Image (tube, rainbow, N blue to C red; front, side, top):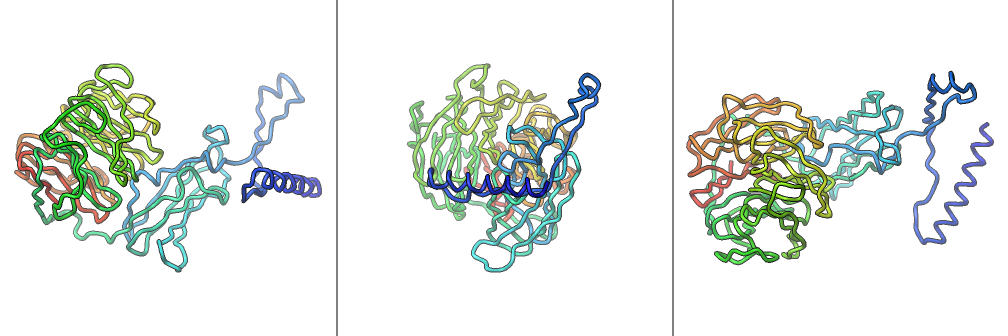
Length: 428
């Protein structure tokens, strides 16, 4: 009865107050929801009539997930759709709708009202949340289930103006850097360019004008010690953490960008779990999982945030560049098959594109609108631009010397490509 329900709330509130006092924590209070779901299974009724079913609550916010963090950039006036999956408190997908799922976009430093979302309940425990940015700048995206943040929320988002026209014409800027054979590039939170310098066995931070800010490792002095490099070949950054693949040492090192310090390393030479053969591309998901293109073993290896091995994704062709798209799918440059494969993060092949057009793809990056830039390591040294629906927009010929090995996209939706043979970065 209502009286019983209210008395239960009082008991919970009293218990929460005692716990709060005992453990010196705050914000312990009952969370109300009228969302009761009743399941009745036929078989238990047949076998035992007294087993009429069970009552279960809705999703557990902290265990529920969304794909908002895979590409934390968006564009003014362009709706961004986010998929939310409700899980129970054991992390199992709920499989039922009925929760209250919402999102809001809050501009950093603004006193104005947040941008709210529209939500579609698919009835199977998944929800589509659509939100349309209205202002340029840094924002926080809050994604909630029954009023509480889902796993990873709030997310930092950079909002930019849309480009017009969309890559049908490209301006080019060349940034000469004092390095030997730049192999890959990534962007720090401060906007610096982190460059894997293959020839001199270092990783350096550069400003957008090419000024060197800091160098990890010692130039022209390769090694296998902590903080040393031997042919750095892939680089990825999320927050303060920078991961660097090494082609010859066959390992991955982790650094703090702000502290300019070595943190840890993982991977050895071989074919087993936690073993690598010619690691190249690298990217990081919102939970901190690290995806490594294990080129020589024709697979992608996935590692947890604590550097432990998680699982492998078998590939049909040798993988090079990796990038996450708007829907959280992993785009893989299948270099030896001359196409791009698209996987779910757990390794299910969704689709492929570029076959018959792309040749020896290496670098790949995706902007806030879902446009895809792909670089070539041989042949005509091309750069391809694809629409979010995987149709070709634009092709540029003879852009690099010996290939453009790595690509990164900055918060202004500019693509940066490492021009390996010319010792420079190219900004599009």
